[in-house]
Image (cartoon, rainbow, N blue to C red):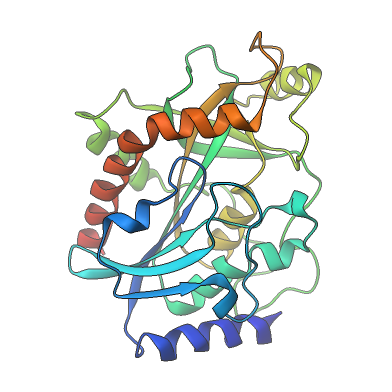
Length: 274
């Protein structure tokens, strides 16, 4: 795996003439097309980057763009592969490992999620403050890559508190700030009402099928992590309607401008503070 990471990283480093990338963002549903708003200094299809997986899910285009926020470079990964697509979890988090090897200091993760909290409505943007891994999978299982991080990384503060406070400040004039705890299920089935109820009982406010593996790996690598869920539907047993991916895409499209405007301001402030 370390060899794969280095091959991917070396390809990107050479392609961008060894410039420093200060931050990264992985785009989930609701963030599709975000990279098109900015001048791309470099751009690669995932198929061009060694060992990157081209996503198969609608709304995940599979492009790596290097753009400037402020006067510093940010890597934008448009889409991700998901565990439910059948890939090895270590291959799913390889892009995050590569970003770490490129030297980023901060990683922003975004996703679409089902809302459990009574305070959430479709279209809400939720700042993730912690997560619950309900999959039985962990990208750090197996031989530890000591070059990348410790055998037993601390997970007391996966999602950086200072970045959460920055998000609160920036959101003030854009939308009502809300935060919550994200529970990771593998998918691809939506959760059953009983599973949602279980997640609620143990403290979850959101349910989804991504983000946690990347957050774990980034934390293992010593990167500051910030993550956001776009509530695209109320979870099973809370919603009175059957769940569908079409609904996810529809709500994501309706909320796109709000989320992307916030994210642009957030990334500029992150790069200014590095």
